[in-house]
Image 1 (cartoon, rainbow, N blue to C red):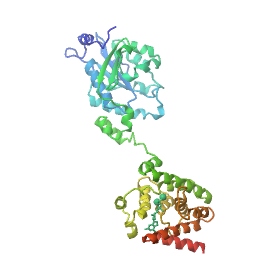
Image 2 (cartoon, protein in one colour):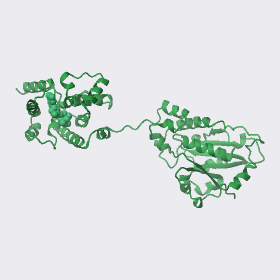
Image 3 (cartoon, rainbow, N blue to C red):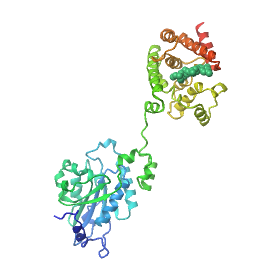
Image 4 (spheres, helix red, strand yellow):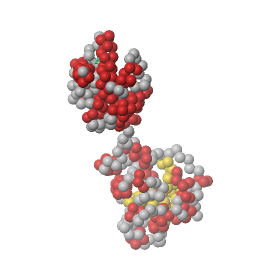
Amino acid sequence: MPDYADAEFIEKNEEICLNCQYCQKPAMPDMTLPIWKKAPKKEANLKTVIFGGVFDPIHNGHTRTAALVYERIKPDFFYFVPSRTPPHKNPKRVTDAEHRYNMTKIAAESLGENFSVSRLELDAAGVSYTVETLEHFRQNGVELFFVIGADNIDQIASWRRGGEIGGLATMVIAGRGGYEIDRSKIPFPNFLIIEQDIELSSTFVRECENKQDYVCDGVYKYITENNLYPPKVKNLEERVRETLDDKRWRHTLLVCDAARSLARHYGVNEDDAYTAALLHDYAKGFSLKEMLNICAEYDIIPDEVQRESAALLHGVVAEAVSYYEFHVTNSEILNAIRYHTTLCANPEPLTKVVFLADCIEDSRVYAGADEIRQAAYSDIDGACVMALDGTLKRLTKLNRPVHPDTIHAKNFLLGDIL
Ligand code: DGI
Ligand code: FE
Ligand code: FE
């Protein structure tokens, strides 16, 4: 058996090339029919390349390999064969077969008329195995070439009837930049190696932000139009975590605990309390200028006291971000975030819970903290007034303006108490 890696053989082989200027190239067969029924009879073997894969999506690494394989083998037919439910992958996580077929077709068209896409595996009932696909294509007068990634060589033995695969086709081993191919370990009687320098994986392409750099224009357009690989939505915790510094994150987690606990105690929705607590200080690390910019972006007009104070504005900004960026629409949660620093007149129970949780979380140490902690579970309004009084005292000492909401909150709660 010839070793296709041997350059001499390649040259010799090209003497019988069917795709040279002296021979007429047969038309592409209709893949709905077995190849031998369509292809014109030839004295020499028709060379057919099979490039199977999940193609989720087909990317520039695939098409570059295909172009190089084509150049090297000069086949009569070149088929991409997208798989339907690949046996080694969880079918649920693979993109719909028709989308993968369409993308592969677009990419094949971009390569030129010599490339086509076979629906063989897509239309098969159930799972398709490589060995069966090769048997289908390997009919009389067909010399088969099967493209396989260098990183798959070791796995073939474990594929269905893996031992037979190397006997059905010349294995075209597609090397990827950086992947060492040990020729002595290649288990196939006939093989050739195609080295290409694009190191890409479909997983990478699916997850990256600049897909247009890794797939052809048509495929990029298709991906965009069909919203095939939307960015993974980071969960709220991750997004808050990466915005806050360590100290603020620890405080936030403790406020979450305290808010859940108070919510449970007062029959308030615990999950809402958690969400509001998680987001309450989201904007705490922003500068006043950044906060004012965010307000401007969302047409929020801060009042004159807020405009001068990051301490007052961070709740307002956190509310806006929660609504516009995190799509929190529950108005009780939004109010709890907005008023967590000052409270307000007639605060909703969730607002009181988050306000108090912020004051009494376990790491808070200030004069009077323990009294407020105790009161928090017996008299939530009284505890709120105590916390507000503490703030008023500090503001007076510092000669800072008191926000009207702080006063409205206190007056309202006193009215409740008296
Ligand atoms: O964000 P935290 O530090 O967890 O706590 P917070 O949101 O309750 O913010 C406390 C700060 O807010 C503290 O520096 C005092 C300030 N503050 C609270 N109420 C008022 C206020 N500042 C002014 N100027 N006026 C207020 O009514
Ligand atoms: Fe705060
Ligand atoms: Fe806080």
